[in-house]
Amino acid sequence: MQIRMKSSLICYGLLGALFCPALMAQEGDSWTYSKETPEQHAAKMEWWNAARFGMFVHWGVYSVTGGEYKGEMPTNSAEWMMNKARIPIADYKTENVDKFNPTSFDAKSFVLLAKEAGMKYIVITAKHHDGFAMFHSKAGPYNVVDATPFKRDIMMELAVACREEGIRFGFYYSQCQDWHHPGGLGNNWDDTIERVSFDEYVREKAVPEARQLLTEYGPIAIFWWDTPRDMSQEAFDSLHSVTDLQPGIITNDRLGEEYAGDHKTFERQIPRKAPVGVDWEVCMPISASWGYKKSDTDFKSIETLIRNLVDIASKGGNYLLNVSPTGDGTLLPQSTERLQAIGRWMKVNGESIYETTASPFGDLEWGRCTKKEFARGSTLYLHVFDWPADGKLFVPGLKNKVEQAYLMDNWNAVETQQTEDGVIVSLPAEAPDEIASVVVVKVHGPLEVAKVLPAPGKDGALVLLADMAYIHNNEGSEQASVREGRRGGPSYISRWSDEAAWVEWSFKTDQPGQYEVFAEFSTEENSGFNIGLSGNFQPVGVQATGGRRDYTEKMLCIITIDKAGEYTLQIKPEAGQWNPLSLRNVTLRKK
Ligand code: H79
Image (cartoon, rainbow, N blue to C red; front, side, top):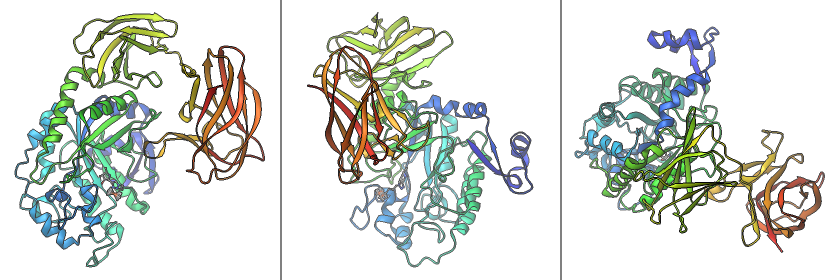
């Protein structure tokens, strides 16, 4: 992570003494760059990576009406109500601010519920895009203490309760949009606003509020920026430097494009493959809306929530699950019940989530895996979603000697059998947990997992997906890379404009014969390339499919496989004939 600091800002008091000599190169009064060492960064992220599960809270004056304005429900996410219904600032005040009085709120029981669910940290909206401060802001009276009948500093009450309960506490702060301040971004509907510059907004409100949150509320573990927009370097620098006020604070990647922060964020969606080389977090509302919305009945099932947590942990990420307090300061029973159910699962199985790292396996047919590695061996946690009907759970490619295997639920031992292709675990007929049963497998020595090559199924079809491909793209050029599908759709190889970039898949087959080779692709223009099976190339031409998003499946050629074995299928652009393709998969079908 890169830290940017202005020497004159940071070189004071304790922080100055701590940071200046060791980390900063000073160049007069100009901005200087310095870096945490990888060791410092790893140490800082240790608790966060061990945690795996946190609570996100969207709570604001929009919660009073549950996203309703004049009998209408203008938005699918209630915190956007003011914007979507184009509510004048004055009306928002009378309809929402003046009525914010969540007398049933109790910080202690709220934090205890997060704790009961197995969550290790809480991130709450200190200020969302509507500009309303849920704490006693000194930057102006538009805040919960000065402007509502409630008059209590909710952020302070939560900060205290979190500290007492050992839950890490963090703030969400929308730094660019502010639909109330005359310099904030986003409000293009209220023409009573007498505009001032955005820089003035940053200077007068965003920076002072962020600074206050980071100095008056005790130890703050996380600062969660949202919706980055372009702004002046001065604005970026002043916002960025405030988080240095809290040693060890973790920030996300949403301050601005150039600011990677400490972790990447995914909103509402889980990446299909484990992101490599970064810490990351998926934030997701428990229902459809982030902020409490009356008409929102779209609660995710307990099964989905637990499996999401397992899926994310198996890819090495954190799950920041959002709940939405109502106008009276409590959660709906739908949320409470779900959190408690996750908590019951975590009480038995938490060891398979906390302090684990990503699965050493590729896709597993029956579920997910997490692991812990030690000096002398490793523990694998097999999360079985689909309990095998024949009682045999196959762990593909596992080479290590199994020392011990048991069910997490009751610590009953299970038999394992080592085979050439992996380990077979013999399970009882009944799954201990319908949602995710954990089988603990302890193995000797450093983990050894053989890469399992894809092979044709019983029907003779072999699907080679984009995200299984090895891409030769001059190692790292953006030309030809796998991208996540839009809205959770299939991944695809994209930006493949470079004629020198090429892709390959290794596979194995015990079914010699002729195979028809199909591809699912899109291309704006006709394109020519070569397909080779272990070096044996044949030319192929395809016609434009329409646009980049118009996918079609076409048969490209026929290949012959003489004998069982391992093969590599390659696709290389033909110089002069090539036009960019987006490629979802190549499928071999036995004739
Ligand atoms: O705080 C939550 C969202 O309000 C915020 N980020 C999460 C954590 C966010 N702000 N902007 N966006 C996300 C992206 C834009 C979403 C929108 Fe919409 C689509 C705005 C208008 C259409 C979703 C649907 C929100 C209102 C309607």
